[in-house]
Amino acid sequence: MKAISLMIVLLPLIMFPPSSQCVRRMECPRVVGDIGQCLWYLRSIPYITFPSQQCCDGLRNLESGLHSVQDRRDACNCVRAVSMIIAPFPTNARELPIRCGVQLPFPFSTAFDCSRIG
Image (cartoon, rainbow, N blue to C red; front, top):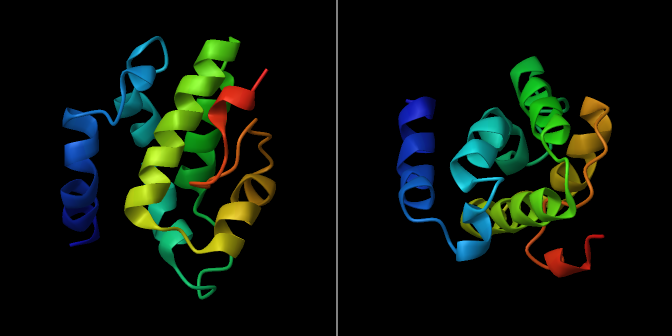
């Protein structure tokens, strides 16, 4: 059931990326695949205190693929688009990279300006 709900929410984003900025080297479907296991944690009001191992593995995979400034900006724009759709719980969104031991150059937020990434 959880997997079906996830597919329904994310399928339009995968099929129709939100902007051309996501279709360069770091494509939205890859970013969504990397963070897909984190959606349950991001959407839960603090009942789930730690993300799953699969979620953290996906974040590490995303982090390892961010080689260029353009990769980081593209991934940021995709994460921003996903955040608009799923409306993550702010505390969980802020703490997710910390709990997984990952340093992403952008937050899980709709308010972040991805063009500021250097």
